[in-house]
Length: 406
Image (cartoon, rainbow, N blue to C red; front, side):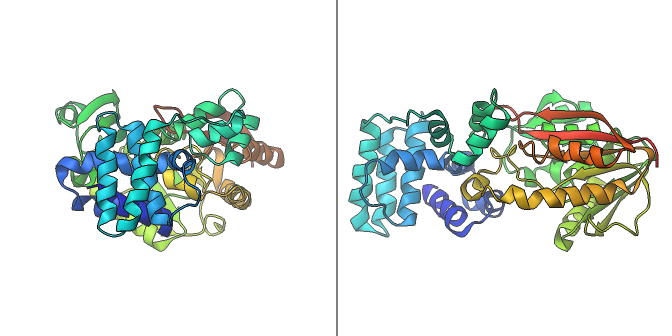
């Protein structure tokens, strides 16, 4: 099992595969009894990679090759975070894995890991640097959060290492609340959201039959925030993979019309497939650039869930932490503005538009909305809300804007 985890981590870290897709495609190769632990070690190592690397690198003069670095970090994660597995067993497993492919390095790994167990780890005194290392976040991100959210930046950093439950949304078109709760894997949360306690959700009968979808609380709140009703016309500008789109459709009881756009054709196909699974027929999918909407009609409601830096959902996407660059958000800001400007021209007078992201960055959130309102006096802000990331939930921003005249 640990060899599978090691290979998976190498694919994500060295070849930049998406961690969630790797798990989805390859978890079946692990025995069912070991799948939960394998997933835990896999994601836990990614979430805490910089911290684990900091720990073992204190005991080496020259770093080994990348695969051995990954094995060391994976082993340190288990030593520091898995209480039920004794340290000697973790070290023996790492050594035995390495003996088969690089016997000379096994003694090196054995010595380093024993020092990790024996020696106390001391973080730097400087607060931002210590926070960056402890929670495996880039230093520039901690500095930005401290500047923008001085009371919350440590909580944000800690949240990136959280192990969150899997939330699912009950499809009220297909199953009642009473029948849904009779399933052993389902735990009550706040209808239509529940906590899923089973394994391999994509093969669960409730998922296969379209009776539930995976959706986090903050993501669902964005769908609610748009205030859709039966019979309305709705435009979802950046719809794929369709999670919010279908929450809207279910809230509308499959009555009305939702135009769901995405710039990538293969992602449009994913939306269409999920519509069939869920039994939803009011969603009309178009392969379309959301900045080019001249030929489109006017709508009662518009959702602009724009591409963003994703700093609010790092606990679910730990590989982002490893590859993120501070320049990324600067390229996204003009695109966000262009999508919002394009979409607002297709909102009916009296209609409402929600601008949303899954990031914690005021340049992409509050400042974007403030600039839009300044340049468009025929729109007013009804409400804006920030769901802050924590050990229990991911982070999202949303603003509801109303068109008061033409």
